Image (tube, rainbow, N blue to C red; front, top):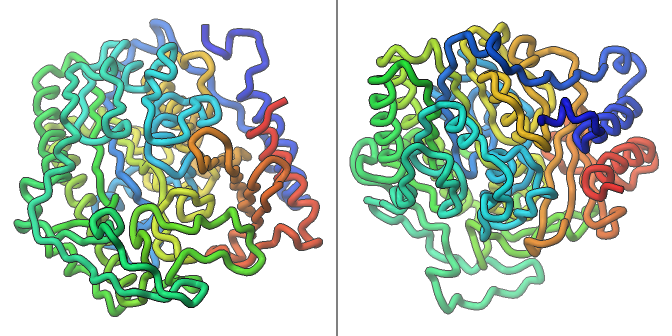
Length: 515
């Protein structure tokens, strides 16, 4: 029985009520009258719902891609015409948030509809299907309901997939990501003084210490390399499923870029002039906790790029250039797959989803990774849903949504019953009216040790608030995201915002530490 019909008060329902009350208190009086609760739409089932021709699904994912796309108003003028076109055709969600800024926890939450505090997956070492064999993942649910389910590339975290989810399962398909044909451009390890003024020790193992090498792929389009092969396989799958139009399909296509090491063919690097790249105003050579910020907000060591070393401004610009080139290459490969969908005349009956697992920091506060970050850059991710016939197609949505909402949304679009316990809220109302009343916040957590909650962030229409430790024992952050989009000033201890902090703290505690 689904939770809607169980007669019990679900945790999802409880959090919705708590959020509605707390958010109303933080809104100006003029806005409270229009910020009414948008109820979750119950999943449809039965002969009437299933009488229509089932929709196909083409599900794209990107790894480590923050909302740095032209259509998301990138300050770097990113070249992303295919993802932008997808957003212009469907609904682009401008404020979507992942549940955990790390690959496996984020993907586990997205594909089960359970937040990290319930999955217990707080690191990259355990498969959610082994931790919770009683749950059914999103692609597995589609397979159980008669869909042909095929995947190319990285959907779940590498090596931690759900074999039962796919009609054909190739456990080695992710090895395509390891295929790198090109020339490495290693950045010479400049010894930038550490924050205390001393020089860092010389690395004893350069390969282990420095992952910030750039790879310029061979070939005009990177033929034979990772994401090119992922797109090729997805195209092959589309041709296979097109041969049997009587059976709906769920094809997953997961690109690894712009995950480190950044790589792309030369022509994508040529799109960007490193001399014109502007570093963020809070750029620092090393991870730096700004005055007025809690120490817990910034890890002292980077996890992906500039590991164990400082970044000069010129080096930083080169790495940002490579990150942007990687985005453009992933965008080009996505465009190839969508073009094939159109050539096969499948687009008019296919829901296309594009989402990233989490964001990234590119030198803000000296940080070059996602891990440990509860800032906007690491938790806000692009989300586009192109549903045939949606009334909101061609428009953007600025409501606060979460990646965990995708599970319920896809269930409703495909008329599948929602498994018991799944959280999130269906986004279908926003697909038809991107400006519909909506007062759902977005939550993200972080665990430093992979076992306990290190901090929780909540994002509302106006505020980003994060607490580190229960009852903010290790500090808190509060930002007015409209007045301070770069998150330069922490307002958590400002007496003028005491009431706002108290209300947002209630949301954090209700989410992280249920009674």
